[in-house]
Image (tube, rainbow, N blue to C red; front, side, top):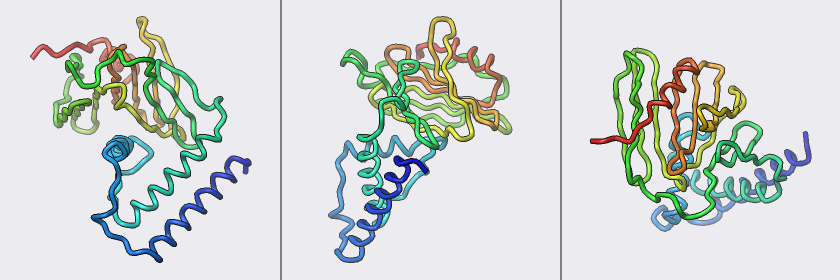
Length: 227
């Protein structure tokens, strides 16, 4: 066990014990326990994806306090981390952890859309897939297609709303340049592939259990929706 792992375990244990003692010793009013809108927004984005290592959480009385303890621990650990674990790939900052990689968009200035000013779509949807779910918000859009057994998911996000965590224990992570565009690629042992890229304005995420050639042909078909 490395010194960093020991430190992580000690911090996690200490904050968990502290939170549990708080639960026992102090009255807790659910209505009085409030977090900022910014905090809630970021946490919802972190746990939204089913492919994230984070599971969807119901923020009960206990979980709210333990979650804050975990976040404080993570912040302390990140301040102690060496810069070598944080890489710049495909215009994304990639931080490698023991069981997952965290990706955020690189933002150098404010010259990018803060909301979806235009919607994109994938044209060459494989035969047999039908649109089964569509969700569009101010800064993200997600389309889910299904055939009889698998799903194909396409997402578009503003740069400041993109924040994801992907398992690295059962997948290989790499980068590839295709037709001048750099892509971040995740290949799962199950055969599922996830490809993430930045076109200069938005972040796109495409996942499907298809051959890599088919995946790139889907990326090629990306167009701005006209209606």
